[in-house]
Image (tube, rainbow, N blue to C red; front, side):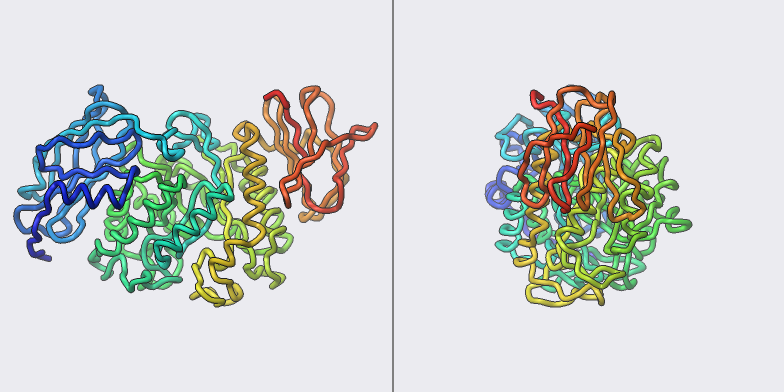
Length: 553
C-alpha cells in the first residue's frame, strides 16, 4: 500500500496541539528539531514524531534504542504508524536525567532511520498516583501489585467494555469522575470493534481485512483521548487488545496468528507509555491448542522485558493457568467467576481453583476480573443480580487467595447503553439501564466502602486461613464464611455472607487486637465483643465483616 505525502508541521504548532490535548500526562517533541525541548516529567510520556521523506508503507517498522542517564541497560521500544508519512515513538522515562535515542526502520526509510536525539527527564508535579509512585508491577513476592516505588496498588477496576468506544468526551469524563469518587483505581475496556460494538460512535473500525489487515490510525487517535483521560484521573487503563469470543468478522482474537500479533503490537506501541495493564485476549478459552496459540502470540507481543502487567481474560469459571505457569509474559492469574448463582457457582468462587492454586510457583496475583454484573440476569435462577450477590462474590474473591483486589461491573455501564436495551449479542442478560443510571447502582457505592476498609489496613499481608476460626457445620455454599489473616497474626478479616457466628482459636492472633464489625452496606464500623466462649456473633442476619487489627498501626 502506497501513501501520499503529507505536509509537515512546525515544532511550535506540534507542541501547542500536544500540550493542549495531553496536558501534564504527555509531553511531545518533534524529534527532528534541534530546538531546546521541555523536560519530561518522571513517569510521564515522551513522544517523538518522525516524518518519512519518501513514500513508505504502513507496515514499515520503526524502533528506537534508548540509553538511560546513568548509562545502564538500554531499552528498545517499537513505534507505530499514525497515518500518512508520520510515525511515532512513545516512551515512559523511569530515571531522571538525560536520555538519548537512536531510531532504526525496516526497511530503511529516510526520515525514520538513523534519527538521534535526547531529552531531559525531571521529577514533575505529582498530579496523579502514577506520577507520585510510578507505574504498576507485580510485587517481589508475586501476590499483589505495587507501584515502582513499592507502594501497594489495590485493584478495584470497573468494567466499561464499550465505554471508550461509544462515549463522548464529556460523558466519559463524567463517568470517570464518578468512579474516582467511589475509590475505583482502574477501568477495563475494549480497544477494537467486537461483538457488542461493531464500530465506535463515529462509525470507525480499528482495522479492516482478515488475511492481511489494514490498521486505521484515525480510530486510535480517538482512542488516545479516552485512554489519556483515564490516566489523567489517576486510574489505571486496562485495555483488551484482542477480544476473542464472537464471530470471526467482528473480533480480532480470531485473526490469523500473524495478523493478531501485528494488531496487538501496534496497540502496545501506541499505549506503552500510558499507565496500563494489558488484557491480551478477552473472554477466550485457553485450553489445548488454544493455549498454545495464545502462548505464541503472548511471547511475540511481549517479547521485551519491562512491559506493563499482562494477562489473558478467560471465560467464566475456567482456570487454564496450569498450562501458563512458565509463561513469563503472564503477570496475573485472573479469572471470571461469571454471572451464575447456583450452588456450583458459589462454591467455585470461595472454594474452587483460585483458593486451591494460589500457592503455585512462581506466584502471581489472583484477581476476579469479572464477578457478576449488578442487575444482570443470573444464568440459573433467571433473577437479577443484586448489590448483595455482587458484594458477596467480591468479598469471597478478596479472601479466597492473597488479597490483591477485584473488578466490578454494572449491567448497562459495561455495554454503555444510552437507553434501556438488552446489549447487542447478549440475549438473555436482561434489559440494561442507560450507563448514567447504571453507574449509580448501590453496589458501586458499596465498592467504595470495601475499598476504604481494605486500604485502611495492610491488605497485601492477608493470606487465606479458615483454620483459625471455628464455625457451626454447614454444607450450604451460600453460607460459607471466609477468613484471611497476616502471618504475624496481627491482622485478620472474616466475611459472614448471611450472619452467623465464629470462634477464634486461641494463640493464632496476637493479643489485644481491636475487634470491629464492618457493615459492607454502608461502611460503618462498631466494636466487636465476644461472649465468654470467645464466640463472635454478627449484629443481624445480613452479611458482615469482622476485622481484627492493631489500632496503633
